[in-house]
Image (cartoon, rainbow, N blue to C red; front, side, top):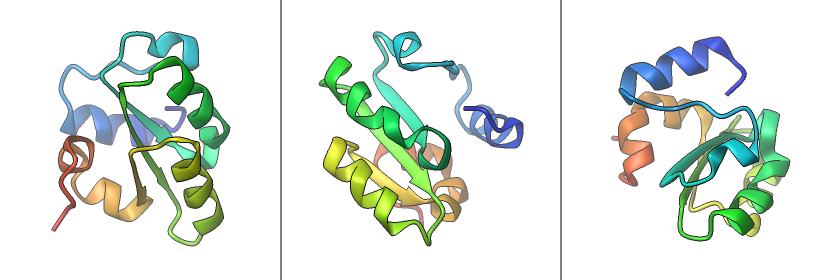
Length: 98
């Protein structure tokens, strides 16, 4: 997660979260959150290396093509950025935010 504001919002919602600089740093993760605007190309590699991990991705709501590509590449959950940040812990847990 490159964006410092995003990092702080995620860290506040998920105490103990670990941020990874690249795909290799995600080894052993149960859940991986991907900012598709910055790291969308990593989803397929994450799925290949972490076949049972939950991959949660977010992107701007207007970027429907990138969201579709992430689903095709193996993301378990793809949400609009605003929806994801409305309730980070629920998005990661798999429940849609209210």
